[in-house]
Image 1 (spheres, rainbow, N blue to C red):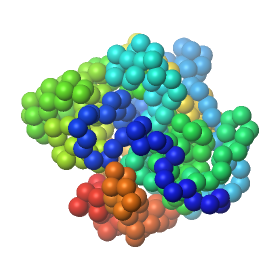
Image 2 (image 1 turned 180 degrees about the vertical axis):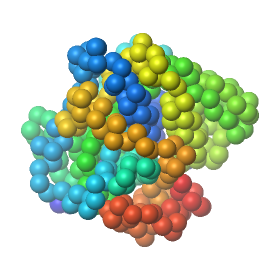
Image 3 (image 1 turned 90 degrees about the vertical axis):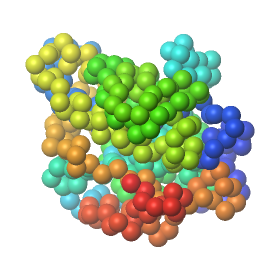
Image 4 (image 1 turned 135 degrees about the vertical axis):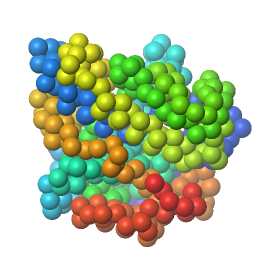
Length: 367
């Protein structure tokens, strides 16, 4: 490993703040749970849309993670359980993303959210561990897509790894920080979330309190609301006017929306409507990038069927326990021993103890 770097590789002016700022940060992307819903959708859609197989299959983009990482990786789970790394990315380019608050004329891509989804043996439940985007991590030495090597660096903001080195390095970073072997990689882009929610027909959520966010334009009263794609995007992005105004504070809304989305997908008779099934599958697959092992409709559908028993009511969502960094209070670091105990439980494919869910940065449970 090369000598440590004293500060984050991303200029302070370009970094999103963990705490409240006077000027709201734009382009909030929250996808740490959406691919779970995509998988559930494909369970139904895969059986009714084979006549459009070539189109759907061609939508999916693949990344050869295993080739990029080589053999120096953590051991696989001792059971038939699986670990997925789910990322949300945003190209921040084009008229569509500009309309969604994604920048429009800004080039490049980055991932602002990530989660490790642990599916134990039996496929009856799932645990999603969210990694805050402002977490300072040690980025290992990585190889870029062009074959060049990026040296290791300390105190790198987690969400900068994707934009600087690429998805394979994000997988390697997560494996190094957790000791957890990542079996599969899934990524969904910015516009895909909006299209998927609209294709499903909207998602009903019970808003816990009045929300008026001038940054996103979201204006909701407390109580149940059926949100379309644009409103859903604003709902999971909002941080102003709810909680402490930080990225950590809005995780509760994101977790709530995840369960509501999964329940909506489960409740729909997708098998009874091939046309609607195809529309949903097309919205899901055209926005999807996976590891090469899942980069076909057949492989993805087979994997989705293996997860059909996952029930939203039993799914557990946890935020990686973090504490505010002593050098930079706008950043967080993994809190020990809680984070270590959390990763250890996942490596053993077992139950996560309550003590491993306590996050000093939030003053309580990280779930």
